[in-house]
Amino acid sequence: MLDIQVRNKSFTQKDSATTLSVLTDIRIQLNEGEFVAVVGPSGCGKSTLLQIISGLDRDFDGKISWMNGASHHSTKLGYVFQNPRLLPWLNLYDNIALVLDNPVAKQAEIDSLLEATGLSAFTTYHPAQLSIGMQRRAALARAFVIEPSLLIMDEPFVSLDRPTAVQLRELLLEILTVRRTTVIFVTHDLHEATQLADRILFLSTSPAKVIGETPVVLPRDQRREESEVSRKYVEIKALFKDLYR
Amino acid sequence: MNFTGYIRQFSSIILLLLVWHIAAILWQNSMLPSPSSVVHLIWQEMLSGQLWFHLSATLLRVLISFIIAMLIGSIIGILMGRSKITDQFLDPWLIVFLNIPALVIIILAYVWFGLAELTAIFAIAINKIPNVVVTMREGSRTLNEDYNQMARSFNLSKRKILLYITLPQLLPFFAVAARSGIALIWKIVLVVELLGRSNGVGFQLHLYFQLFDVTGIMAYSFSFILIMLTIEYALLQPLERKINRWRG
Image 1 (cartoon, rainbow over the protein chains, first blue to last red):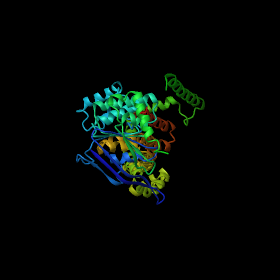
Image 2: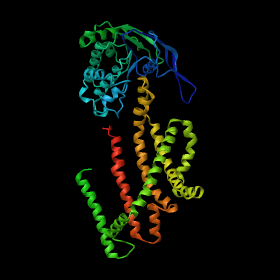
Image 3: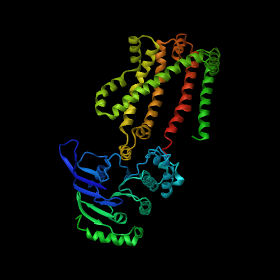
Image 4: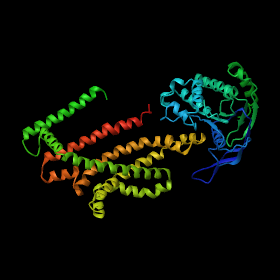
């Protein structure tokens, strides 16, 4: 469905002439409805990769091509950032309605997502009045409400306390069973990747390139069982333990 | 502020009036009229229509020059905040205008453009514009790139970005510019009227000053201050609270 090719992406330092290469020789193919996790050490350029895929950053050598022939602009992207990036001056409902072209027509869709994320009772609250876990759930609802053809997630569950993170991952799995969506998910947590993804890609340290790949063969209905996920996690970890020495 | 807070402030004002009243009785001099004679004159001027005539002339000047200054100041400020070239080019001008004394601008404006209404309004606005520019420049520099990225990744329209992302971030700065601006304009408008207008509170103050009529000076000063405080507390502060409501 999506073919991502980044031959090179580098940043030019402001004051000097040196360029810093962050991504090299990256080729990722995403299939329709597939959940791909990209795992790599902190600061390896994962966020940059997502910015390239989303079209926020067009200054790179390579190309992003959509198989269905859709141009970049007409493709609906849902983006879940590291921090929720809800607008603090809008209430929860308006934050979600904002990203729709015609929110009135999509009333039912908004309501059902608010229901799914357990936020129905908080629609008139402003983000500052909500817990961080609720804000991230709202960011999830906002990304799903546009019925994205690609959902981009940039460490959306990072720096949360464990119970909240577990709860959010389960929520994501739950929403995905109802709304099958192609997802590219960046994380540095292999356990998280194992639980969520159909396929895991490993990125090297900067300049990042893909140095490993594995499918995660684990039925959807077993992904909420801690023991199954952990067993798989140990298996995958053993397979790639030499990767980041 | 709670109820007892208001009571304390209120009794503090009453005490001030009381001290003034006693001092006026003890001194028995026309240079220090008692509070009651000032109130009496205000009442008389109100009945004759004089007070409202001069107050409204002043308020209209405040209002028009305020709008002009906020509009021009915001545009220049936002441009300077968003574009480095504009900023570097206009910065020396800004520093010059920030440092010219209000009186100099007023005198030069009257000399060059004549003692006209338009000159008066223009002179007030010029004094205020640099402050608005500084505040709005600061505001547009602090626009959050994160929100911008969010907007672009969700492909939001230009109208939505302006309305829901850019303007809400600038609004608090606009409110600060408005409040500090109106405080400046009140002070300048009287000087402008004193030097070259034939109506308004500043003109009346000049008149009473020439007669050494302290009662008249106080009557007009207090009426004017009262109106300005009302605008501040009944209009600007609630507006600012409304703007900042979401900072829960």
